Image (cartoon, rainbow, N blue to C red; front, side, top):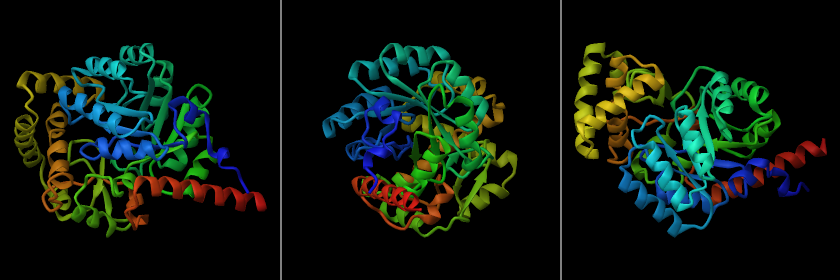
Length: 356
């Protein structure tokens, strides 16, 4: 029988986990209870801080540390005005991993590494992986087109080996998009990756803060019930297909901009941000992601529409990011049960392969 130690990769030693499994930093979902449960199960839990104020992040880090002594990470927006201050906070508090949803500035990577943290960048194209590898990142999460949220066009089965061949000798490559079980973990390792990252699968666990009724909506979907739309925030975004999303798809550009502007005002009120900070973030987003001004305005849709569904429990008027893998998920295990299941399945697959 295959020794479970065969599943450990250099990534496990890099970040201090038992298994090469990452719970991704999903906005409104990857909060302390989920991150702590994932890390406690031997995976790498990540707190999503994009929708948090600085003070919220201080509390979130303390909450995770009170719940587990295992390593965890915090996901940052690379274009956030206070990204440097947040990295300094994480360093002071002993956070093991800083992850970025977009390509960070080289100086942010340098700051994190000088503080002793592991830097993980999420990418969707080979050229992006090569860029952050040159800047000193330690690992990349490579998301294929079937993944949820902001996504590209290249499927994981093509993108992952491409990135492994390009940068696998310089940093750890983690596959994302379409993973949910032990078979997927073994497949990723076969491609040359050092682990897998999962969003939708961890969203559908008992520790996930998503409302039960909304989880039921996810569980009822098939692999064809997602759509990639640009009507949420101006860039390709994979979400569950709903009546609202279909309406957004049919709406004109002017209507989309008006709705986005209204949501920007609502999000400012919710977050307590100053207009000066909102404008500065918008300008940083425009530069970092090479967006048009209309796309920047439409980006205000994302936090409010996702919050309506996932936090407020209103899938009828909100948007639910999801990978296509949602159609293969049919239960709500705890994080501990999920990780144990994946490891056990992966061992079974290796045993079957070795038996010939």
